[in-house]
Image (cartoon, rainbow, N blue to C red; front, side):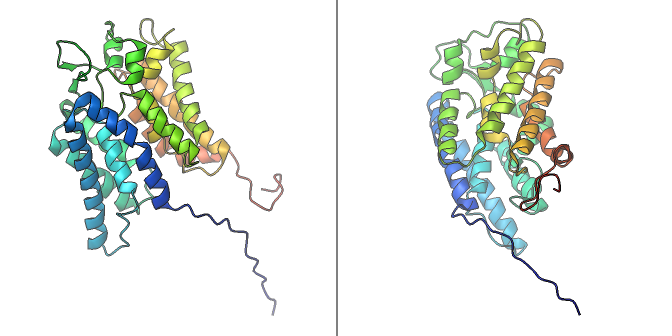
Length: 315
């Protein structure tokens, strides 16, 4: 009787855990949270806190009911709650935000097996739900308190630009966050500070973020209609949620290889740019990244992984 020899493969050990990673992501979002409070008032803090509480509580209750391991303390629900709040205007009704929170955690995340098993970004799906079901609830943007204007509500920079009107805001104002928009996406400076922290902690793939942002800006620069994006890279870069999407919403953990991550980011960028150029929507980030999420399985066949311990021609 022949015997089968089992050889254990090498294992990489690291102190990094899901809780550790998500805790650092939460820390990286603090500058943007402080910016939201500064620009839009204490209501931004209330909504962000509520969103986090609902996400964590929903995850805890579901795992208790289904008798699964409780992971509500791993900070992943905290990150989802913050990102959901950051993608909403400060005028969002509480019920709409709560509905997005419950949907993101319960349907998108937990019903697919929890963290690591959901095939799309839960926060973006929650945003999409509210945007499609109750568009008026997430389209009422306000001008930051630091901007001296008479208007209280206003369209986003990209929405104004796409309509052919003058934006009325300088590039510096867009970069700092002194413009109408969602609570956490307006200040590009604070988002980049948080992103730099994640890069320092080596918990994010900077190449994927740069690829996504670069793809969108280059394509809209070349093919965008006159008067909107053509010749105005800074408007396209700072006028919307592109920095937020590339640095925080682009989920690239589905791919282990560098090539796979870059292909995924480029495809998301192409879809986002196409929506910005050809559709009635001025942003396209939500649709672009979510579509790339759904295409992850198909995209994985575009490259061949190298199996550890084998020559590349045999892999």
